[in-house]
Length: 530
Image 1 (cartoon, rainbow, N blue to C red):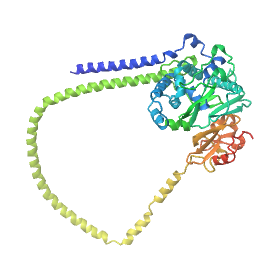
Image 2: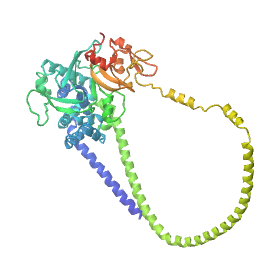
Image 3: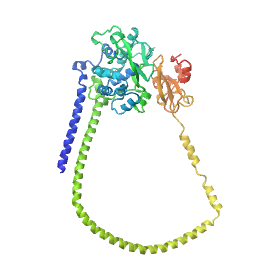
Image 4: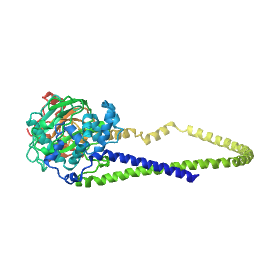
């Protein structure tokens, strides 16, 4: 019996392994179209200016947050395919319903974010080979990729196609001395930033790269022109329909440092997490079976992905062994039932004899208890009389004596406990008095002390200018983030005794003020140093 059950369990386990193998084969088939050729892989270590500009041309005029989201998600091409299929099968899901649906998906957060922009997700799926190449370039040459974006934006500006509209706001900032990129391709002196007019609503630009950038200088590396199905072709530059994305788009670009970063507030709202780190990092666990084309990138992330794969396989193997054990346990249970049936008759006979013995024992015990009860009753009467006599003596003592002893012990120390609790309840977060002031100099400007952070624009040196509130307060202020200031004006940043960073607004030539006062004064982005 047991041998037959174990054989059946082994057969079921074999079927499970076969099913997993079919899933793996399907995944490999999905990514077959993005496998690099040997010649391409050999030349992928350092991409030329022409190659980089060809890759970013279709998205260089996207708003900065959406641009950063595409760059991050492109490093997970297999999950992009899965998300695109989900989006196709679930049209019209948006807002809170989309947020709820994304909590059930296992994709990387950057891929989940693009479910709010199905137009872009579809383009990445339709141009899957481009998606992988873009992601590989971004992992290997992030600064070079962002410099290529700036060069193309400068060309679009010269051609008259890059300008502020009701859908977006374009701002330009001159790089100061010492802020130039160290990228081999060089960085333009002017930085172009593109932000949606409404941070919760996006209009995705649709344009022909061969027109908006002027004469394309690289005939061998011409970019593609993609437009969504049903889009009415007209001018070379236009916008798709409005998309209400809420906090789904949480990426941003730090043009000062040429790196993609995270807006923790929006990230936490959409993903229901509680992160505070603004730096984005690639997670190889979401790469799947897609290889890294660059040798250095493969060395950096390949071992991490292999470790994640081993952990995943170990989990599946453990599940298989547990299923095998459960199947064996079921067989053992059946055997135990049969054994129990065989012994039931013998147990019944033994039970009859045991019942007779128990009845005799109860009869003997009752007799002994009756005798012991008589003796116990006699002792109880004697004890009651003694206690009654002692109580009369205690009642005759003066009440004043008892009061004196109570006063000597002192009052209950509940007041002291309450005071200690009040001291422990003092708040140490937020901005302190005056919205970020306090002892130690400067204003508390650490991002970890703030919430409801919204980017309003950029200062002339590229620093972000934000609206925010301190933890424990709903009063809105405008100002900078200490972590960003520390990168370019370290002399204006100190670490307070509480461990949080403070910024000396005086050294920056800025005024710390409430959002209400800033609006009343004209809502102008200040110029640093004036």
